[in-house]
Length: 319
Length: 226
Image (cartoon, rainbow over all chains, first blue to last red):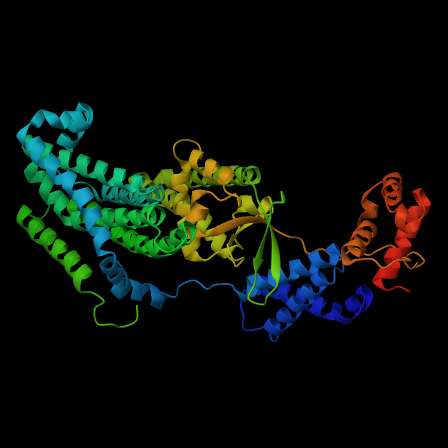
């Protein structure tokens, strides 16, 4: 068969496929396209014939363009449904964290190790605080958690702080994750720096006698926030580890597989940090309740986080 | 091959040609998106400025969302292209040519932060220049490509001419060369076409405009107008 006859025989298919694709690209619904997959596969076959018989680049490009558009429509992926999102937070997320228990352990050590070390170091030698945070920042923290200044913050400020915590904390978590692609170095650096700074501030607050204002403030949201940052580090470590030790895969394949898994953990982290920002802005800052209530509620938060990650999703229902 | 094309095989067993987008066009697209984001922040800040600290709080949440999710939203819901990419005719696809999914778009846009390091997309640019598919770190982690949109234009028709048998058995690549010459001859000057046709003298025995006419005749014969 020569090209003219070929074109005569199949041009109706091409025209119909083009029209169907125009329609599909407009409506984005797949339930109205009778015969689309069949027609698409027929044109795929025709493209292969055009190539092997060398009918000409223009015809090949025309069919290549049609097939490419068809491919995009046929293999389009749909986003998650609300049920899937709910399932993820009920069961999938804690399961994922348990599956990565070793990396999570390393990340927790990288964050909390320097944190506790700095608390101890600053308690022993108070002047150490000033080699981590400059005196101006230290003074700022000092006045922020001054027990004498126990004025209740306005709800307007609470709202501003909510925006600030979302912007700041989630960005830090995302950066900690992204830094993992640099052979995990970025994630490790972020975890350690955050641990050192938080530990120094906490130690400094104790030294200057602001502990009674500082700890009731941080105990409420600290559970979600610190654990979420550690998990962001763990998901970054997973990326870096895939590059450094890909196992029996190519580095490229290992990295893509690790990316697909760890981004799911980032969804969970995002949820935790929005929750933490909410608690930090509207509950932690409130001075209506006595410190005892704050400690009890904060302790309950830690227990809840621990229980969530150890127990949730163990009953084997679909994630 | 120096061509910046990449082929992916579909489950139907055909290979699709994708034209990869290089660092320059992607930088332009980024600049357009950046300008759009700045404009969006400015527009958002004006009404929110009237609401004091509540307004500032909302503003920060919105800045956060735009900064991290602007590319994700458009890549997933607008055919793989942010407004900047769309205006330059490029889009994001998976390595296998399928449209980018939520997860992949999230990965490539979060890892963007590592591409930004140490300054001004340094790592991203280095990665794009080294990688044969112009991938930045985010594309590597997500398994995505940035490609030019292919226009599926109508097939060009070969100009009518009295068909003429080639007078020798032509191999497929030879036939193809003649057909492509006939398809593309409108894109050159007549003089250049005649000059090129002279190269086929061993086949046609003619040079210049006569050779050109002869080649068109053979092309017509080859496509079946005989």
